Image (tube, rainbow, N blue to C red):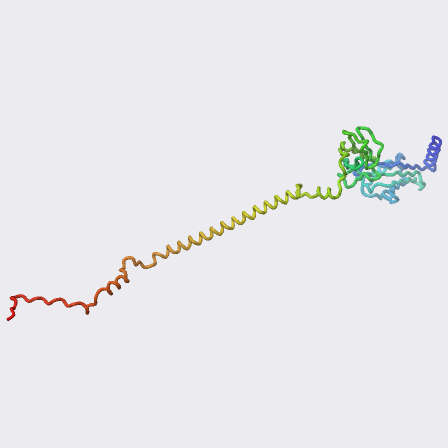
Length: 315
């Protein structure tokens, strides 16, 4: 194995230094938004000559024509300077240096890899029939994902590194002890983030919920039992209905009282305008008295008065 590694190293050195060319296959890792300098490693540039930088075979800088893209610059040594890099800035950058005669003096290639910092993960516990499943979930970022090839996952159990590098860690019931603490770590080439430790608690005696149990647990309304909430809402609606009926009865009685009071006030206002019959004689009584009294034609004549003087004696 050592002989094979030596042969590969010699082959790379021969390829690098042949024909005055230098090729670098290592990737330059940088974070989004940073400033990066891609080296040329040729010393100072000659006044006579040319320098061309390309990004994925697209020209971004040429010395002789002063052609360059925004956020791109070149220092005195010919190194390419990029400002505020983004993920699309990643790729292969190639430089070609020519002397005054147009002959290739040096050619170099660099690979730029721009990455997002990994988000802070959380450990999600899911109890299963044969133990527990722990998922390293990154819920705080829409950009980065633990399933991406740019990030790796590692697990810690009670402070010791585990061999599992998958997103989901399965722990059997026989391996899970009370007080065991688990944590996961996300890592890429520019950042590292670790989750808080959790202690999964799953009872092995509890049978898994079937569909009927799940339907019972879902019968909740506003976080409370559905039937209790139904009783409370029905009682509240009945109370409101009784209250409305009482208010309507009170309004009707007040309205009838106001109408009766208004009618009485109107009658009192009409009393002074009516004739007063209290001092007049009773017509019927007078008629009755007159009918009982004999007529003047039927009354006896009063006696004639006697003449004064001696009374005449009959002869």
